[in-house]
Image (tube, rainbow, N blue to C red; front, top):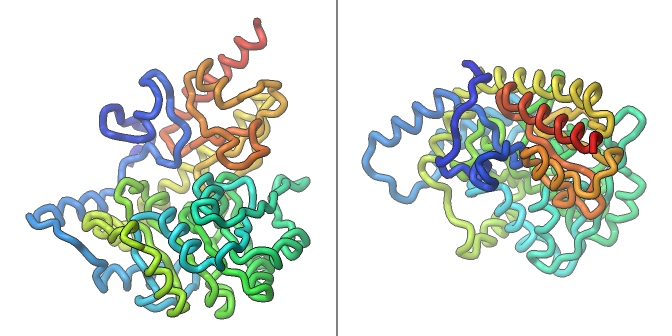
Length: 383
């Protein structure tokens, strides 16, 4: 599989490639520019040989595939009935807040964070309480446990992003245990977005917070999907793992006619990804790690005004542009370099000097983006 090939995605309905003019190189939304694994394509073609595409439900085989995957990869042992299928992680977050979070209670969010997680509490008139990350001397982002314990008595739920978007942080077991125990102690619901769980670097292993302890699991809604790791976001398929039967029943009530069932092809793609997609994913993860290292070296040697801590997961780099002395870095690179990055302010109120760059793309595309950015900064200095 040649991941260096650049596929033409203009005029395909791609959100990533149609949001900006054609001369802009899109490096923003979390959508990789790699072809889908062949087993997934074959599964979709095979399903389309049957001419009926009516309402669909997850079959027992898919439930068992996911149960096996969670056990083998995360040592997390669940039952098939613990799974709830959804058209996306974002609807799952909102369903959980609407039906499970205590009315009027605060929602704790570690910042910076993925924009839909930041905005979700306001959808249900729940106050958001921010818990900022701060990088330590080693470029890591530890949870401020003292601040966590101080905040928990005033909130009813915690939105966790693990692995974290946009920081690329992988929470270790000790840190997750401390967070989980604190939530148990203060009777706080945990809504854990674990959509990037299968994209890991440097030999790391993902730990679902609900896998640590039955008491923690009893207050957890864990949201996962094959969409990011296997690049099938357009299939609109995700699942929640809710081991507490009472929570699961209330969660399902949150559909309210707004959150529908999953489409038939999304279920087929998800089954193929988790059952047959491991070789493809291993190859892609190795390529992504090489891209990450190439990007980190380029930032260090060619962009003295930008700082990047090495992401441990995801294919997203969080770039601190403070030293460039540019009022609006995202707008600058969009207009002057024709490179579209994600706006830092989407991830937090104090992130105006940050941009997020998607390095889940063929190396030639990444090289071109960096060259455009480098030229734009040189032109700025030459003025």
